[in-house]
Image (cartoon, rainbow, N blue to C red; front, side, top):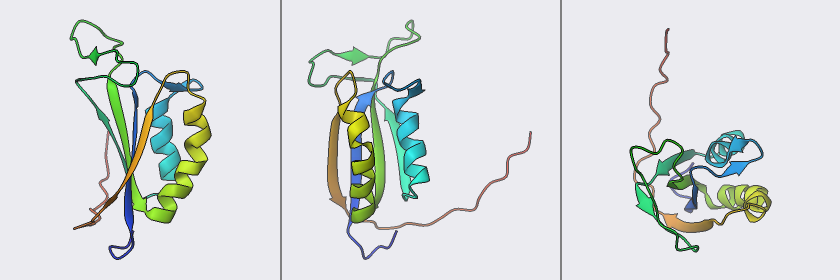
Amino acid sequence: MEKSNKTLLLRIFIGSTDKLGNDSLYESLVFKAKEAGLAGATVVKGVMGFGASSVIHSYKFWEVAEKLPTVVEIIDEEDKVMAFYETIKGDLEAMRYGCLVTVEEVTVLLNKAGQKREFYF
């Protein structure tokens, strides 16, 4: 990702229990973004929220399989982000439950790669 190119942040608002086939939707989106060679992806789970259905979802420690508001953020150059969105658009439109997708231009101040860590067991 070049700092001089137009950079977009794609946000996909979903529920933590949403599925794509048998897999978690947020995991599927992150793996697809990685396979597409995008610069980065992050999943953020919310504590409380509601969407178009107006149903409030919130974290309660006694509920194990709670549906929480979840945001998948994906960042890269405009052409790469928009091409990626076109590849996942059909999956999102076919979802049983709703979602919201937004995109905004962002300014990258620093894009520094870290050293790869080796994990030993």
